[in-house]
Amino acid sequence: MGTTESSTVTGNVRYTDSGAAPEEETLLNNKTSSDINLSFNVGFRVLGVQEESPASKVGFVSFFDFIIEANGIRLDTKDSILMELIAGNEERVMDLRLFNAKSRTTREVQLTPSRKWPGKGLLGVTIRFDCFQDAENHLLHVTKVLPGSPAAVAGLRSGSDYLLGTPEIVFRDLDDLYQHVSFHLEASFPCFVYNCEDDEIRIVHLKPSKEWNGQGVLGAEVAHGVLHRLPSSCLSSTGTSVGFVELDTNAQAATDVFLHHEIDSNVTSDSIIEEVLDSAHEQTPVVSVQSESIVEPPVRETTSFQPETTEKSSDDPIATQPSNPDKFPVSTVKVFADDTMSYQCVQ
Image (tube, rainbow, N blue to C red):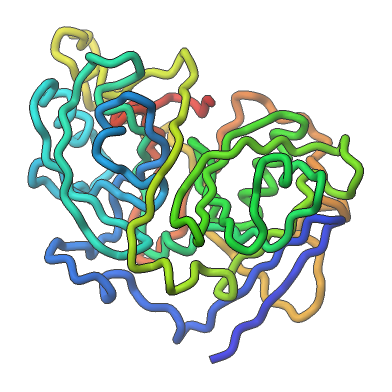
């Protein structure tokens, strides 16, 4: 079984994308021993957890954990059922079943939705409706870090670190990273990083910049594809998350509209959810460029890893919709704190 690898060299930032032969692809539901129906391969992906929140006490693993069942109800549809269950069980124990994309195992946890803590929402976890087929491959391998670079300042480790995404998006391919870094040039942003040696997911703060003594804005080589998947030695565990996220002060918890004493009688739950889902961000499918030669990124006119000259509006949505081999209609629901569905991407 052969693979074709293509690389894009942009100054001191190199992106590598490897494409897999069809026979190397295996459906996720053929690998799991879970007795639950995973045929749709969807659930609510855990992104970030707030400190001192109910969610911080149950051992969620950011990016790799998906909430697939709540109180016996399978969460395979993009609707409001999870938010309604959370709001309806305030101060009562809930049973959640999680699927871990790294180990391909399920486990059950119990937690109690509550507002008796200083953060946002009833659970304190940022989640998003997502597809978990091949989710363990939605990461970017850091293969080289140059001394004194923004990547080095952030503490990235070459060889063992994998970039996963931010509290808002998942880095499914190299274009996702390019777009996000371009948008945050000279500005710091939190990034979730998995280290295969420590088996931990930590949060680092990257600040892309041209103001350092080197080429590129990160000073790192990042690769993606079958040659840069997680090593098999770390696939037997779920991993561990360290560190917590901080939400924007204007972030709104999606469960707020389902708390009986806060519901506006003139606005139905269905209309609220419809508005949120209609404004959900779409992420373009992953397209692997297969070529034996060094090529430039498509639809980019520069030869170095620099941001677009066109200034982006702060209201522009950040792309966050996964490709879906099963063609299941998956859309992004940005959720803060369990629960906390946002109407725009904020940090």
